[in-house]
Amino acid sequence: MDYLKGCRVITTSAFITLIMVSVIPAGAPARLHAQAVRATILGTVKDATGAALPGATVEVKNVATGLVQHAIADAQGRYTAPELIVGTYEITGSLQGFRTVVQQNVALGVGAQRVVDFNLQIGQLEESITVQSQVVQVDLVSSAVRTTIDQKQISELPLNGRNYAQLITMAPGVQSLPGTNNGSLFGRQNLVSVSGARPQGQAYLLDNTNVANFWNRAAGSGVLGTTLGVDAIAEFTVLTGTYSAQFGANGAVINAVTKSGTNQMHGSVFEYVRHSRFDSRNFFDPAKLPFKQNQFGGSAGGPITSDKAFFFLALAYRCNTTSAPVFLPTRELWSRSSRVLRRRPADGWSRAS
Image (cartoon, rainbow, N blue to C red; front, top):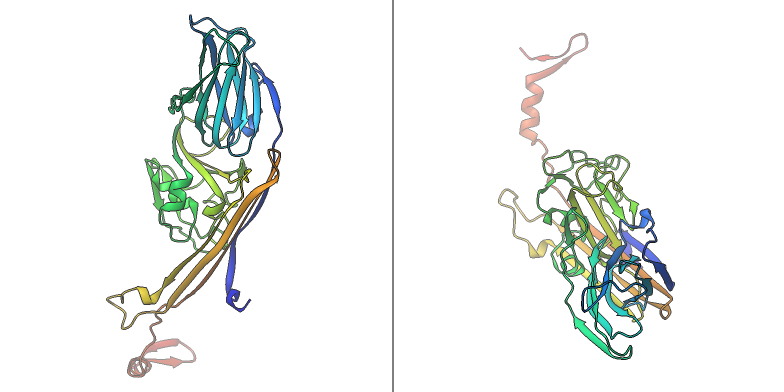
């Protein structure tokens, strides 16, 4: 445990996910509070002539967790499958007297609304047609201006401090500003300005919970200056314009969702090292200043009960040792200053004659 002396825990997270099978009618409204992070699949079911097929069944299955949700098409052939977690889905449309159509590799992001339409052909129900990646990835439902930062970008882009909030500047119109106060009251993170707006008041949502600090000046701990580590973040979106009133933020919304366990065990172990041995000397410093920083940790996720309950754990530490130059007056400068100024009990400091 001596290795952990002087280290700070910057990420500790544990999640348990429960999955339930449900059947939702096409006209049933989705709960508003979950729409910020959950995704929705919607569309129509028609036959080869373009006529609606009421009563058709659409099955939506999460490939990683086995989550299954059913939706029934209404009189106009429309269906909706809300409350879906981030991931890749397999969607099946079926009706008695028609061939079954399966659409695979449908990716859903944070708060996405994806349109998946079905055209069923007459045939036996046991006959199936598999369609690969034919779903349009453009959001045809919402007018919100958004930038999605996926897991590949979060894990592979270099981050000094492994703080996912640093990637907010990848969205157009976002500018990073240094914090005006580096104390624990206002927070230690850099602020962001979106389209020239004030760098306060943005909504920082993590699993639909506002994690902005007390002054609405960035997210995370004001003392540590960090947020949940990148190993626990599945993906996040930056909404910069014309988004729904449910967010109620000033200029932008940073909407992140945490990872979930799946039917397969998965995890990661990491350590990132910064050391003055790898640095060159600053031109104005007489010698290289000692500096050492280690960030290490890991994550693990998997099933508790297959297709029903899952767990995910993440932990990260940060240890750093740094130094800064301190300028002190020399003996000669101190002697000259004492001759210039002398102390008078009545008048205070005055210039020597």
